[in-house]
Image (cartoon, rainbow, N blue to C red; front, side, top):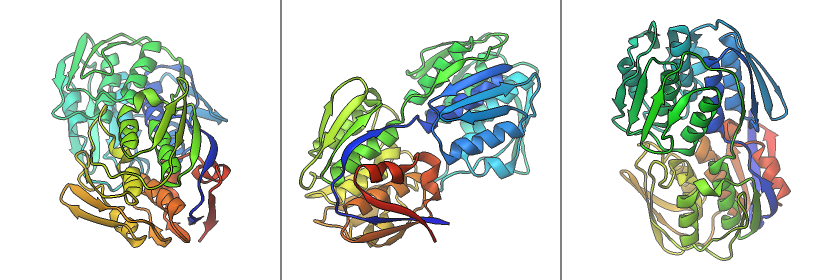
Length: 418
């Protein structure tokens, strides 16, 4: 098993290109199940989750070849309708095949999902929505069994906004008979990207990016070519890397138009962020950041996927910060590891009180999930001495060659075998 070693205290300088967004790529990969023929997906990030989803598609009988950052996907007239536990348990996003399989094949058997241990993330909203569309659903032995001769348009209001739930129903409703209206839908940019991809395939979707989405079902969809937008969470992580090391980084292909909340919060910390073009951002910092308070919220609020990275930065701030987590109930698992490095953080229910210190010290730490891994990398970049990060396989799920990119910026970082 790999681990990452970081000798901290080096300001980062240079340019970094932001990779395609995993959370946009996965639902678009799932959407290919809706249309027979040859699909192309460009700017695909090279990540473990993408590889896992590719294995799942092949298990379903879909051909997928990847050359560089482009995937060619061949969907035949019939696909298997079973998504097995061995694959779905490793990645929660695998549940995204449920809607497309049900809509096109009339049935689906999909294992209940797994993924990062950051709290309960049930799929009850997915299932309620599919039932509202006319599906017959039962849960047996850890699997979802779904059937429908043809889904019927309906009006469905999510109890809470859910990104993957919205995406699953978008795909299912695209082939339903009649009009579907999704209320209290998720507004995330990744939902918009999926809707745009579906519309290129012939779907009729309006309102994506708002909390009310209208889908007029069509009889069939056709394959298309898609471009994956850059990853806003990866971009935010490199912004914090510049800030926490008191360096200066130019971000290329940066989707800053989707990053208003994290950019605003970093500026409150005293970080200089210059938007040089539609996709180029310069980030620099000097001295300790200012303490700020932040509450995670669904888009367009501050993203929960940036909470751990900001906590690493605020652990070095002047003053006391309060971070309130409202999206996932178990997303402070990185706190204990940051404390091992000298941070002063106390968890109080859904909040973490961060009392800034003047320096962190390298230590052996263990990653607990994807974004926690990123926070430990960031802390290690700023810490005195050597930080040893174990269980870094989480990183490979969501960051493309992070140690290589950081090394090119001047970081003293290496991946080694344990």
